[in-house]
Amino acid sequence: MRVMRTTATAVAALALAVGGGLATASSASAATPCPSGAFCIREADGSILNKNIFYSYGYHNLSNVTGQRVVVNNQTGGAGFQECTGYNGKNCSPVYRGTGEYAPLDYTPINSVVLVR
Image 1 (tube, helix red, strand yellow):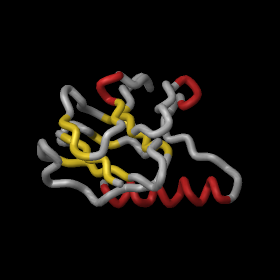
Image 2: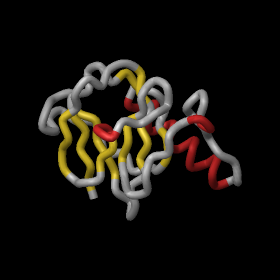
Image 3: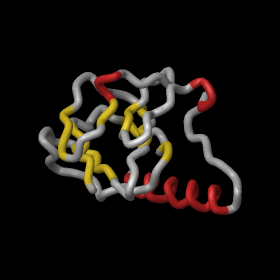
Image 4: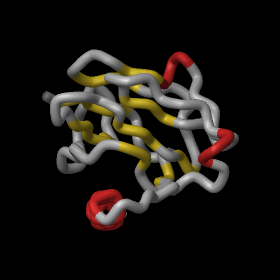
């Protein structure tokens, strides 16, 4: 599953480099935008709840975030994120630094995210 994230990031970067775009959400035009400088987790309907918009570096424990979710890394300066199965930023994925939307992932086992510089 994590390999798919890296592949999706590479494909998105390639598509943007050749002048195209990549929309991973089924209704990207109706989706709520993620603010500049933030990392966001979308609801199934494409909206973003205030509790799922993160600006500060470090770990953020999640509450009631389950099922297939699209995340958006709209951080600046090359900042990235990790997805963790443990609370308080424990048992984390590699750091993903690509900006934009990521392919849907089952967030049921994800209990925290970490924003990194």
